[in-house]
Image (cartoon, rainbow, N blue to C red):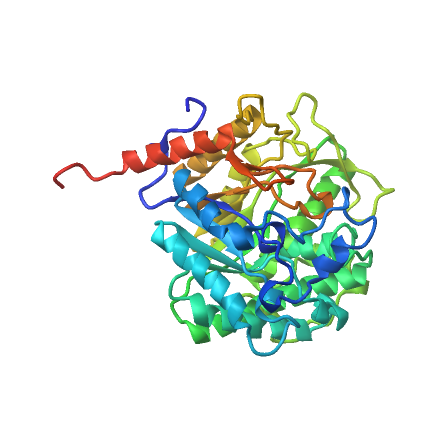
Length: 457
């Protein structure tokens, strides 16, 4: 516990928890009438997933959810972020909702509340119904309207019990990694498709916010973005320009329309030939006031200019001596503090939540049954300390959620990467808490004790 910050640095009411997403943990891909998503098809396409894995079974959370809630309770988690699988609610992405799908998430939410755990729901964590993908996916403007309809069905059932609603998870990753880099569904490498998907994802967010506020006026609404600070690996002017462009693509392309009602001029000029149609009312719709902004932070981009690479011409450069996770990501907690303070200063969201933060490490079960993961414990301690410094600087941070509750299907990496507080044996699906999970539990308990009312009060 000595490496963790003083728990008193976090105010009473601050929430500590963990996060997951539906396709990565649920399995049961045909249960209750669930339709296929584009990730089902992508994962079953040979060569797409590094180990050939799919989400067909994943962690079997769909049937083991009570066991998983029990683990959350044992770890003292105060908040749990999960995503709703769109094809579990509307198998084809349109039409009347499936009762079985809504019933599953209602049981999950009620189970969380019974255990004193605050539900944080994300409506879209990349599992687009395959029927909508076949009709154009996020390149089609109509998909945004379909998303708003789906969101309305879910919020009507659950909004009275869910503490936070996020419309989308990481629209940048969905657009860029899926449509330009080809590493995620739908596996494209097309800049025009990428920019269309990015705009329509943001439009879907705006339409969903509108629909949700009409259906449940008091529901707290936000969106979750992945953010990353970029630093220069040398002092060349060309590298400074690459840093600016990389920041524009990764961060400003989504923050600016959400909070300023416009795309950043410099990056829009770079991509002018490939920009989609942006109608007059689109940006005002995207920039509706939000109750909170969720941030997913893992590492920084330490880069140098490389003209042989496509825009933003930024090549990642390893930092000598830095600890790298098995994903190859540097442990750099200063970046979380930088992004929290920068976004508070430049965009002034009403509240902030660290919606994902974690590290993949080479976890093994030792002969005594323990999973010793000191690097992850250091990672969590360092990033919690970064949160404490941001709070001291006046950032309105409300919660910190670890990625992830459990080891899971890690998208294009399959089952090769372990981010979880809980180790999952992917043969037996047995869960066991890693040392980092117990350290996190103790920190949460220390925070609760620090803010407990004195006896007799």
